[in-house]
Amino acid sequence: MESVDADSITISHGPVPALKWPEMTMGFGKADAKAFPDVKQGDTVQFEFRQGGPMDYELVSVQRKG
Image (tube, rainbow, N blue to C red; front, side):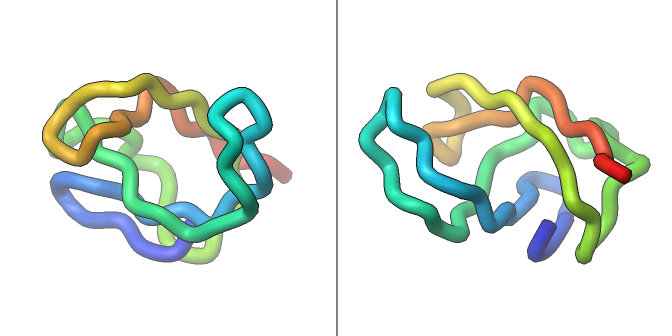
C-alpha cells in the first residue's frame, strides 16, 4: 500500500498477465469512502479489482497479509 484516501488506494503490485500489465504502482478507486478501513500505507495486501468506476478500476476486496 502506497497511499490510502477517501476515494482511492494506490498499490504497488506485481504483473497482471490476464491484462498484460507489468509490475507497477497505480491507483484503484473505492466504491465507498468507508471501504477497507483496516488498511493503511505500508501494509502488504492481497486485493481483487474489477473494471469500472471513476478511476477505470475499482477495488472489490483488500485484505492485509501477515
